[in-house]
Image (tube, rainbow, N blue to C red; front, side, top):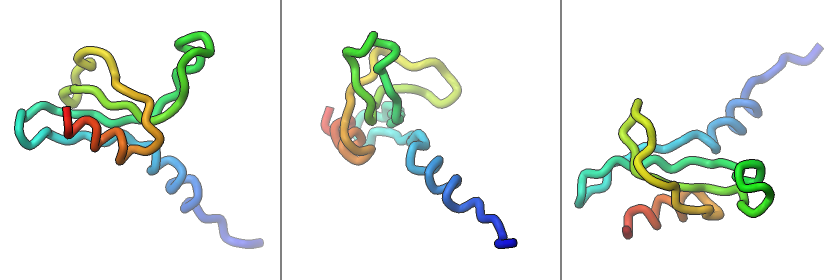
Length: 81
């Protein structure tokens, strides 16, 4: 019997983990996250990476911006706004 490894499950989960950062100029907290808005928007929205201002442990402030193809694209967009 071959030993089981958890690496594939952990790797798959890790690439969709949310990222929290603080904007260097404004000090605003930014959350970058992956979601699928297809159900929420009755098929009109897509899946992808979004960003929004948010303090960790508190509800989001305003609407999320996105979707973006990658988490880097969403993060870069957040840094230029």
